Length: 481
Image (tube, rainbow, N blue to C red):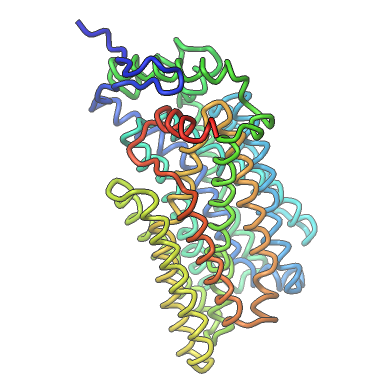
């Protein structure tokens, strides 16, 4: 008679493996879907708050008399806040739990949104967007970890990447809402405030919804609260699978505890440091694809290329549509293709389409023809990037780190990601103005090639591996070198 606990395949502490029963069906799967939907409102807010500035920037600049540099500050202040939010959010999530952290971030979302909407001047707005960025960064570090720890290994890819789907869905919603408000109510004073206030609705939904969701079972086990973890897992797994996962994760947590892991000191451990370098590289290169130069300044790019402002803000919706379509394809491919294959294919396509954008600025005369050609290559870039690198970035960061330092290590990587995001947001307008489209997008293409080489050399494969299994295997391969 089976007890439901997994069978050990090896007695080695470094390589103990378990057979996990099927996760179950019916109510557990439905409950997982509810958890993922509620938690990913954090991703929706991430997308809306980063995308809304694309259409709000022109009327906002007119109201506050912004220069190209101060426009960059308004956009980049949120990303700088997000960098710090990612670091401190990760530490809070490790100490206080994933659920409490997300609840706290929902409150910061609400406060930051109200501060932006009511801002009397540019300086106040920059400060309010910094506060809002703390919530965005905290959510970007915490929500994927929460989803990765709640989901079973066989569904982890699709569940974690739902957050990315919600991010691009939030950006698309921002583009559509901006276009509607600008074209129908553009004559209203301070119309940008109405664009920003929409974000209150999902922030309130996140706060209320998370009150009824469970804590991460893996975090509970790391705190010695095994019975609570088992109760949570029985909500989202079959009883046999729940008991099996508790036994496996408890075993791994005991190994981590013996090694006193859990903070900055772990960076001196060779295999952990290797994972952090990989994670930092993933975040660093993801931002230097230039994806957010399009998502933040797509309307301005089309305007500069020769389109009317009203037409450009509508045309920019195509970036959001293809971004959402790309993420949808990426979520399908995650269950079919190895992670490495998708990453490397993605960076090859990114380099190709950036090169085509650069060449368009050389060979197609300025005007509507150039603008529509640029838009065509931009949406192909967005589709390719969001169908490969976009969802994989957050998924890999949620998968590769040891349990006890997962939020801490992800915080470091997401800090780098957001700081590079801020650099792109701040300096993309001056780059376009000073260097032109050809040099700027040529530079992005070159960076994509470097990213391809980096990942080809270092990126591990995590597809179809339980988080505990991946940790054991990676530690066995690199831990003794």
